[in-house]
Length: 474
Image (tube, rainbow, N blue to C red):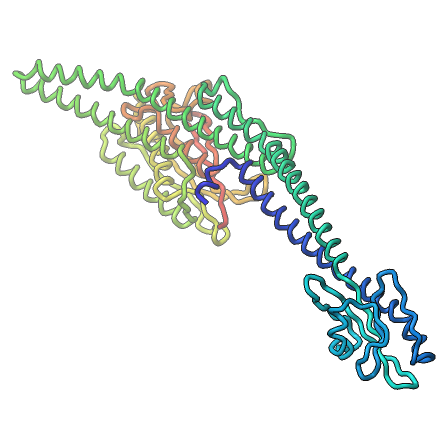
């Protein structure tokens, strides 16, 4: 079995085909031999009946003879009621067994006489002298020779057919697996070259299993390429973004070393280094989080009740952030939702509660940072988050999260690329530690849940971010 597994698919299919063909051929030869043997036996029985017919018709008229037995290989005997042979052309071996032959009844029987086999038929005839018997026999040598030659011919023909069947199986298998060989060669070229220089695996015109395999493998290659591109992009972005804060941190530490004799300056340098380290840690965490989101869809599910709970928790965290920062004094953070509207039972968003909370924290944090960055008073500044149910163009229910603020808004030319990682319009909406990843994480989470994110400037000022998430029933 282990040796068979080491063979190629073509060899295994060919060997299997040969074995199956040999079994079928053997069964066919046996069935044909049995059928021909039965036909010959019936033919011999018919001949025996014909041999007996003429003597049996004449015997009642001439029970005392003379008996004119035919020749030409017809072996007959006329036997009296007491077992006396009155006339016979039977061989001596059969004549010696005449008593048993006339007692066997009207059915033909095989009788072995030395090396020869005979088919013997006995028939009783009523005459004026009593019951007499006509015994006929046929030598089975011809029948056996015919069967042997027929069997030999069938075996030779079966061998030729098996060989032809094996060759056809080999050729058909090679032809059927030729697309696999081409796919393997293309895969080798893909592995040895850059993705931009080599295309995908060839997909044949036939809608068969090989085409489905090629399509599946092409999808896998595209996903692997996209994953590799994301990894390269993340490494490139990380190296670019981490270079500046690392250089700043190094400079701050060098200043701290120079200011070792001045406690106030040393304390200032340590605090600056601590702030830079916090920014580095947050940037690294955001990079890891973004990589996790883009690696695959979320396995979490969140219902409407939990969505509302996460919204209120996020509002509490945002209010705590505002109250703990003097620069955010006067900013009002509030939320809206209609408690009377609820989705159908079992409807859920394809996000975990943590991920939905992260969307809220990023959007609310960005809005507060944008308002805080302005030089104006914040007495009338507002940040409002609303959660409503809606129906999309296909009739499916969706959850629409909207975060509006009264901040400075965004430049119109920056809105189309606002969800890209490490993009910054200016310092007004990114803060000092965001790193340009907040909206990228929001966009990635929405995409993972099958939703979308839209940004638009509000009138007279501010920004509105709308996150639409489909509700799934599972």
